[in-house]
Length: 171
Image (cartoon, rainbow, N blue to C red; front, side, top):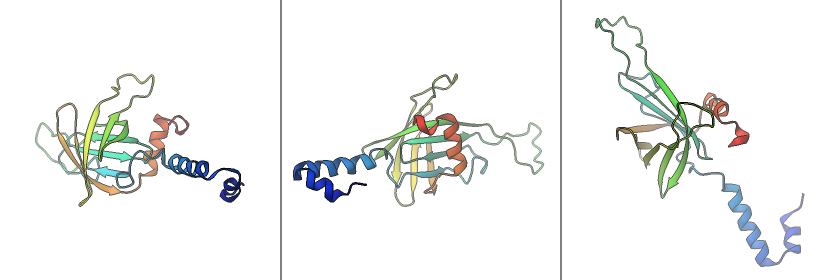
């Protein structure tokens, strides 16, 4: 392996500094999302939490992500609550995150050949550091979602899910 010292001997000082700058930039070029935004975010403890609609966002440093949502639990027509969790409708889709200034912006992503998915829906978010929250606005109805940071990591099952939608070698 070539050391920086041997490279420096063979390259002028100006070129050496330019090379170092390029190495530094390329090492971080893939990171689109700042570290304080990477991880798991949710409106509740899970998509099944409580009696309201829920949302989750999973973000990776390279800007890829997943967003999921659930409806409020169904209500029985007869009003009987038998103590069982009521069913919910769930939906999820891949997103691409970018930064516009210090604001994260999510855009829905539709892999080629997937019918029924609309790409390019824009979901602007605002980050608050204390407590760590993302406040996002849905495009269809301008509904505000306040998501709390669950973890700085994305669960392995979400990584596997994203790999099934967009293989790692295509990202």
